[in-house]
Length: 417
Image (cartoon, rainbow, N blue to C red; front, side):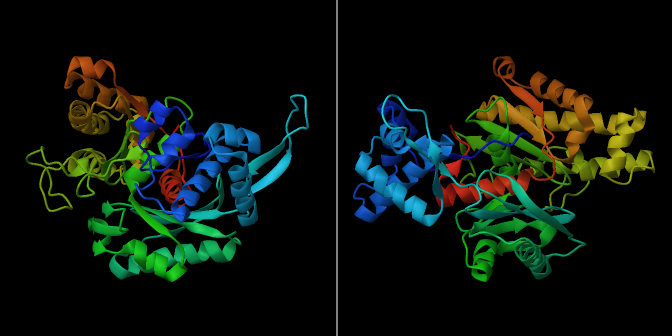
């Protein structure tokens, strides 16, 4: 997945007001309280200036004033504060339009670092990321069956290792992507069955240890943010990313923002039960989609017909080699996933759906089977305007998405155009 710069945005922006006014300042002012204090107004204006400089790579004070609608005096003062903080620097002169060549400003990518974490099924992975989304250093630790407090300690081990092995610049914060139902506002893992976490205040626990802001998001939601941030083509404000690994879940982006639902569980499609007679699910239900369509389920079913299939890699190898019984297992699983996607198409009418995770290694034949059932089971008018794509995001998608979410909250930098 090609990396692209994060762009700036405040998640509470009233986009209709912003578009009607036709200016970045109108968008930013729409986020202010009705009776904003001078301090609040100054903070919002500073974020507006920062986002404008960041989005344009290098720009002048005069251009920032023109784009934001702020006075040149205000812009100069705010830029001075950003330079003093180390976030912005003067980087040379631009072309002259007849007078003195303007001094150009740029956000320093290495001025702040973020630690992004991906709490996977087998590994806890982490990376130090700069303000342009470049991974500067990474490491992983095997989970090895840890859960509860031992899994929390493993998070500390990963973060400590990153900090000690790679001198971190001022640490902006820590973004965590984890399986489970997550309340990102409070940083609480409401339920993560594999890790034996229930109502765990993970964000506050990590924040108390390291003294920096922490944000926690569902891993599928983080993967959706990574796709929104770094996808080179086909970017839309509405997007569904379905991550198919040992678990199965969806991240839903609506109007450029994560949609988590009233109970923080939006996208938990892996635990919709509609396959009677299948194995019990880890959630306590029976016949959940995850018991049929996840990589864990496919490996287990394929292993019964081919003893050489023992993990994700051997499943992909047997499927791509054309082993007929394994192919039947995988195609049946793809049809089950397609039915679930048809429900999403009808309920949300989001025109772009992206499949990521280890199952992406199954390739075009698996994707074709997913599409076949999804489109055949959807209203034709909606199906015609829906794309279902495969994306090989590599190992960094979740931790980059979690980092992007942290940067959005702390600095207003995100992928939204």
